[in-house]
Length: 116
Image 1 (cartoon, rainbow, N blue to C red):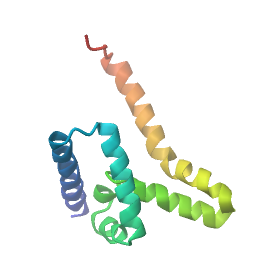
Image 2 (image 1 turned 30 degrees about the vertical axis):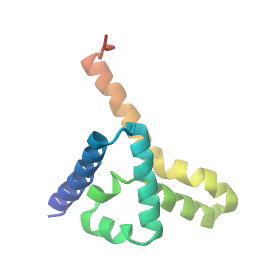
Image 3 (image 1 turned 90 degrees about the vertical axis):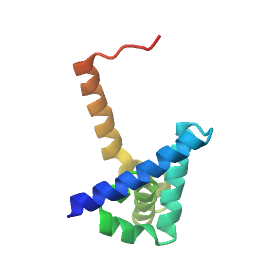
Image 4 (image 1 turned 90 degrees about the horizontal axis):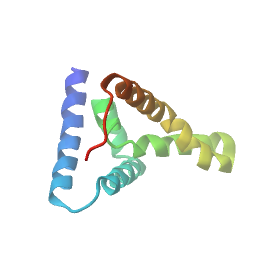
């Protein structure tokens, strides 16, 4: 059942973002920044934690700003001011590393070419 919840919630978030992209002139990078900020704000308001507990990764992956802010808060509590810089990097390291590694493997398998 958790897989279904994750799929539905993640799909709804991604569908809303795609509709937003299609109907505005904002560039995808700016929309990603809005998603990060939305995750941080919803987490700070205490609204995002119950959704993550209910839907799992379906809610935590699209709005990853929540995970970044959670990592920063924990690092500041443990290490002080230096945690402001280390916490976000530590929280995002696994996802960023896996995205880079799998993208590299995909490029080796499919041999991408530049568009003309």
